[in-house]
Image (tube, rainbow, N blue to C red; front, side):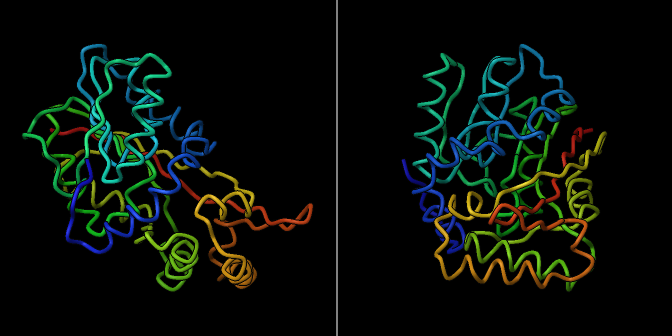
Amino acid sequence: MQVVLPDAAKAKVRSQFGPTAEAYACSEVHARGESLAVLLERVQPQPGWRVLDVATGAGHTALTFAGNVAHVVALDITAQMLTTTQRMAAQRGLSGVRAVAGDGEDLPFAAGSFDLVTCRLALHHFPHQARAICECARVLRAGGVFGLTDNFTVAEPAAAQHYNLYEHLRDPSHRWVYALDELQAMVEGAGLRAEATFRLSKEFEFHAWADRQRVSPADKERLQEMMRDIPASLEPLFAPLWADGTLYFSLWEAVIVARKS
C-alpha cells in the first residue's frame, strides 16, 4: 500500500528512499549504530508493551525492540521500506511486527495507543518536525516513553545552514537538522518530560555515505569542496580527515528519552 500525501517534500522522501531500501537494510550506522544500543538500554522495554516505530525505514529499530515487547508497529510512508521491514522480520522469526503505511505527521492511531514510540534517524526528513513530535506524544499513553534519535548541529545559524546545505546536496529529501537545544525544546513543547539525553559521534567514509543516496560524481566533488571550506565552528562536528585516498568525517547524534506525564 502506498500512502498518497499532498506535501511535495514527502513525495521526495518516497522517491529518494524507495530505490535505496536495500542499501539501508545493510547500513551499519542504521543497523548497528551506537544510538540503537543506547536507546534500547535506556528505555528498558517491558514484555507487555505495544510499540510504534515512526519512519521505520528498513525497520532496524522496530526489529530490535520486537524481541523485547508484545507487539511493534513499524510505520513508514515508503512502500519499499515496509517491504524490506516485513522481509527482515520474517527472516528473524519476529511474528509480532506489523508494517503500516502512514505519515508521521498525522499518525493513523487513537490517542494513548502505545507504551513506547520511537523515531530514529528520520526526524530531519520531516517538513514539520514539531508536529511530528506532538503526534508521537498524542498516541502515547500517560506515563509512556518517547525515544528520539537524530542528528544535531551547532547553534550558530550560518554554520547550521552550511551543515544543512551539505546534507541536502547529498540527499534532496533532507529538510533540517537542528541544534540540540532546539530538539529538546520541541520534545518539551509536545508535553514530554526529557529524562535523559545522550550525545554521540559517528564516523563515515565519504564514498559509502554518498553512494547510499546515489550521489553523482559531480555532486561528490561539490560535497568535498564544501567540506574543505567549512566554518570553524563545524570543525569539531565534522572532524574531517583525508587519508588512504578518501575522506572520513563525523556527525553528531543525540538520543533523547522522554516521558508523557
